[in-house]
Length: 337
Image (cartoon, rainbow, N blue to C red; front, top):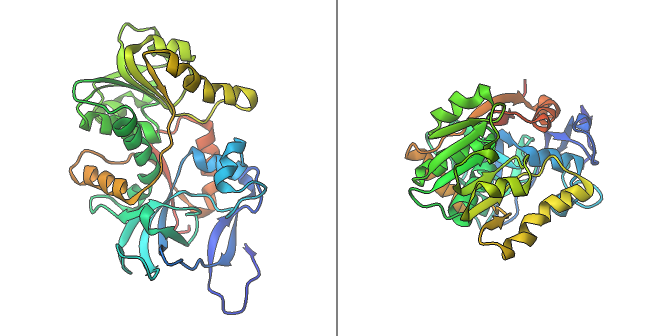
């Protein structure tokens, strides 16, 4: 275990750290200074940290666009983890919503650590119906789904929605929220995950190992594409004339191909009656509360694929990069076994 030098009597903590960009294998358990919350921040004793593909990008520093958030030349924190669930230990002098002892969940930077300082505006009280592990799986992916289906697609009752990648961390939440909005939901996944996707409420399930959803006769009012493994032209063929395609995958392309895939829908959209969209999901307290209300009403519950020890974060990130994770991978920080 590495110990970073710090002034005498400075409180320290353990964290998974990689001081430079590269393979997740460079992550190691280190002792670093314990964060001190700013006036509008909350010091959280971390119980669990949710992982998603963005953590892989942040550790590797690519796509390079990711460095706008994580640091251009080297990581700002070097600690993976954007999602957190835990206990409030201390609050900044301007914090109004929380007090020590509260159980919270939300978004931060560097949650694969014993403590994290998070913005008050990016936390909410943990729903009573969720464990800490489940709560850590919800923030980034849940908000991505909420912002896509509620704000971008503006799903209305009776509309048809196809979710490509329905068994993934985002897809499992998308199936549930689309149903809660009254949509007729079709999920696309592999054979082994079909029953799970049905259990989440999908009206129809397409096994991509047997059928290509872009060759069917059904037209959809909204396609939420978390995989982008079909050409834009093929996907548009099964999108209704005034339907909305939401592209939401950062994997599978690099270099020039990445930029072509990123920009092509946006450049084409003004010239068609179909809406071809990418979007930015910004975490905020109000929408975390909305997610909590969906949980409390029984309409939403994260699917946990696996629980990892903090020292196994690198392995968890490698598994995320390989794809095919059914649900969310979560790190149990409180029990560092």
